[in-house]
Amino acid sequence: MSDNTYHITIIGGGITGLSAAFYLQKEIEAKGLPIRFQLIEEQGRLGGKIKTWRHEGFVIEQGPDSFLERKTSAADLAVELGLADDLVRNSTGQAYIWHQDRLKAIPEGAVMGVPTKLMPFVTTDLISWPGKLRAALDLVLPASKGDGDISVGDFFRRRLGNEVIDNLIAPLLSGVYSGDLDKLSLLASFPQFAKMEEQHRSLIVAMKHSRPQVKTQEKPKGIFLTLKNGLQSLVEAIEKRLPEEVISKNTGVKELVKRPDGKYTLVLKNGETIETDTVLFTVPHAVAEPLFRPYVQVPTLPQAKPHMVATIAMAFPESAIDLGMEGTGFIVPRNSGAKITACTWAHRKWPHTTPKNKALLRSFIGRAGEQSFMEQTDEEILEVVLRDLRKIMTIRAEPDFYNVSRLQNAIPYVVGHQAWVQDVNNQLKEKLPGVFVAGASYSGVGVPDCIDQGKKAIAEWIASVKPGR
Image (cartoon, rainbow, N blue to C red; front, side, top):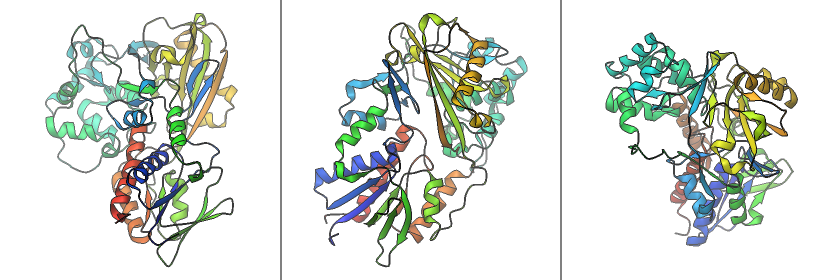
């Protein structure tokens, strides 16, 4: 390694690490920077939780299936990769909640469960009259005086009451974070709600102001985007853009060694070593932390216990499914007695994923504290899911095929998360200068959040070392 050449090693080939590598390569090519880099991935494939199964004409996501359009980094990356024509918006339609053994429409104007239209909320039977009156207190309650972190559950219970939380907000938000809302950090997970209360006092008023104005005749546009060949096509496109020699798969990092000259040696699990100036860890914190331990004692949040969620995709002839109503799917509250947490009618929400005359149901299972399914086989999970679904809709046949995907390290951001992240970064800066972290364990779990973190980490590192000057 020459004195005027910098070397950075990116650990982890999920979307955070891939984004970091892509934007680093872009800077190197555009500015001729004296930088070399290596991307290390323990699995035999890149993409992390992003994984698409293309089977018999179906496009089935085994991890995340889309991203919010308003978080522009994912769509921007797709455009930069030449995938602009592959971007697909979700079809809109009524969504439901399984309540009192029936599918009931989520009230029009309920944004993340918060009512923004009067009549749909007044007429819904998802909430009792006492519950509606309690929610209406949000219009007169003062804003919170404290500026510290609290749980999402505490925040909404204070503003809207228990019933709206349990029957509307908790089921909807659990689609983003599968943890317990009464432990989930408001500032780390949904900071926009805290800002809304600060600016408008009333959450209902704030959400009403934040809703986009839509003309009466205009059908609402979907707010999510994906790619017609699956999100994995984003991963594949990045991999094609990177020099083949910079990617090392099928090996992880066994040891991080801090050298006297301020550089680092990475001992890989395949026996190889890498000498590097900088290391960017984009793997889950539970994977990175043991490597830091000889030098840094990073406290673990006691409540942040990882749990698993599973996605079950099932393909049927369309004639075998009777949904009984228009719409794109439903969510299931914890108090329903059902094991599943949600079901997307994917052939309606994402028509491009499903061949003609076929139906694709994508169900979810795995709440915090409810992990018994972990000990079950795929066949047993399918049986549980179908049993729940048959209580809710008509299914006349067994699936043509199905797929069960288990996602590990589903760690919610508990109260105090932002302070913990700052502590991690401060300790690394002091004890392991040149070692950085980014990814879903730290500052956002969505695809755009992870892309932003990878891109930001590289930009800040380049700005700090000023290569080529």
